[in-house]
Length: 292
Image (cartoon, rainbow, N blue to C red):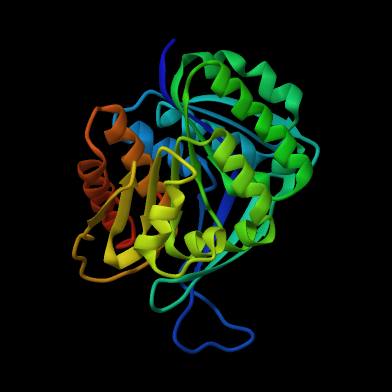
């Protein structure tokens, strides 16, 4: 068995609530949706682009976790999903009129994954070209130790590690630890502008990207509707975003971008062409509700 991409990360059930301009403390909403989210979004988009994709995570012993795994398998993702004592992670996404969102999350069984379980899945590591991690999974010291074990396995197997910033708040809270992790293990780093500011303490996006290149082989800073900046070895390039009619929901746009970028790099495309394709995919996602 050969994999192009192995995704390690969180399993969440997304509850999407589209907020009207005005609403009362007790309101009846007509647009509430329940969907599968978390890092499975990256795995699904990668599989849809044609990559042979695997996923490692932990959910609750409940119907949410069971359906989550079934959907990944339906999307042709090879899964190694463990069951925990806590419920499957839940994330409430309040989608505002401008398409931006407020997230409220209960990590649930995600925080129960262990080093032993990561090691048990080492056969999937052995099969992969790229291994993906998210900063969400490193939100405290215990989880950091667990997922660094995965990074060590990936490095021993000679695989490239892609790291997604995921949250400016998480990066800001443990900034020094993340810088050490990134310098030690990461090959491809993908951050949005706010995450880049949190990690580098630099405000200008081009300067952020240049600073990140001092940490990793390849860096990407996404700029939302403005596109992205990508760079390697001191060479930095701007890629314009696709034009869209209306932003409906930004949930999952970053995951779709990351999956497409990795996919195109696996195919042998250069950074600029990969970033262009990633921007196109993200533009599709923000024009509809939901991450997939």
